[in-house]
Image (cartoon, rainbow, N blue to C red):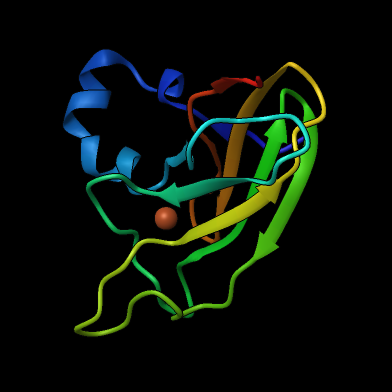
Length: 129
Ligand SMILES: [Fe+2]
């Protein structure tokens, strides 16, 4: 099993001194609106909140995976150079359409950097009405 980096992988000092590096590898989850049973819910995963990861053929974010707790819900594979190259700078970001069928989800996401491995962000608990 490959090592999975989270913010807990770093000491408080490293979290401060390597803030940019950690941010640009961290998948952040957000949802559109309120989760309702049987109604499609868009779940967004963006890698990097304030900083964009480099995106070239040797070093880029190649997959983004969404989980409910430890159950994989969806995974996308990204090509190199789709969000940034030369003067362009963007964040790898995808949206998944999930139709809730239970009361609560514990979303978490992972991304894979071709140079720095697997990274996981914070869990987002979503209550379904
Ligand atoms: Fe990287």
